[in-house]
Amino acid sequence: MGIMSATAIAETPTTTKDFETKLDRLAEVAIQCGLGLAPGQELVMTASTDAMPLARLISKHAYKAGASLVTILFTDEEAQLLRYRYGADASFDTAAAWLYEGMATAYKSGAARLAITGGNPSLLSKEDPEKVSRANRAMSKAYRPALELITRHDINWTIVSAATPAWAAAVFPGLPADEALGKLWDAIFAASRADLADPVAAWKTHDSKLHKWANRMNERRYAALHFKGPGTDLKVGLADEHLWLGGGTTAGNGHYCIPNMPTEEVFTTPHKDRVDGTVKSTKPLSHQGTLIEEIAVRFEGGKIVEAHAAKGEHVLQRLIDTDEGARRLGEVSLVPNSSPISASGMLFLNTLFDENAACHIALGQAYSSCVKNGDKLTPEELAGKGANDSLIHVDWMIGSGKMDVDGISASGGAEPVMRGGEWV
Image 1: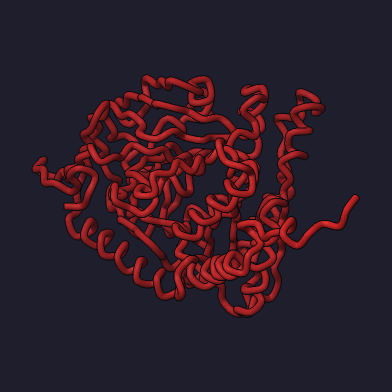
Image 2: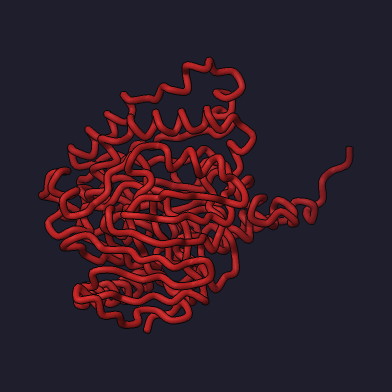
């Protein structure tokens, strides 16, 4: 065996100095802009083992910002598959309640929450959908105490992404592995503004723009939105005393955070009983390892009464059967078709990114922060204002360059909000 030449160990797209600089910037904006971590605050982070380099850099910036303790909970996708290969049938109704109770305890004690996403979109696509559904339901029930603190924005939290080989291969199936991974990282850096010289300043400017649109919608006080496009004629009533949010928000613990990075949306809470009409998805939904394509549903009195999909319909049906609230809306979001993620032309197969390419709706749990004084209301009071309750919260995209949106006033008058997918 000969000695390997210097040219044979050329840098890959993810080992260059430029890549390391951008990865460090992504970690910095995750802490400084996304999380708004305060000195002395603990951080609970979740990530896959593939995301370890980014998790370590985020830990570095968290400690530089004064974190008292960073706790990382790593998951391994290959180990997750072993459950489906060898686990007893009864085990799929079990979840680590002790773990989620511990996370909820940490949040109640003042810890911040950061999630790094980026798993294999097709991880569970070949597994028994009934087992997948049961496992998800068990996990959702166990996670509920922690999730409620997040959906109420009681704590500062954020989500960022890390490119992984399996995710890159799914997005760029025709490219060599290293090239695909490099292209996906480039797309993540661009969407997260980590490719800019001063990403923190860029995020502050972007955050201000999103607040401008949210403030405009709050000033108009529409009673409903009317979405019209190919396959879509949907009227979405808005919750009583609803609030539009966009960009960052001050959490109940007083810390300012931008929950999703990237984010291009302004969003609010629909009224769970006032959604009627038909709607068709404009992008596939990657859900729990299955790609659900061409979703078409019909709402009556706020509830899905008919649901179909060209691909993955069995997963869609199980999703909306999770509980009573799974057939109702918990969020409606407006995103211009010219958003950077839409302009990229990429299908990320990751909701964090794909939802920021188009207007979207979410089945399931509503955000109480999108209701006036929602953090002080009981679940019954929130329901009385129209906020939905569910174990799930799943976004799917309905917007496009052919989508028009009208705002409907309490008196029934209509005025344009979006035309051709763009703000009016």
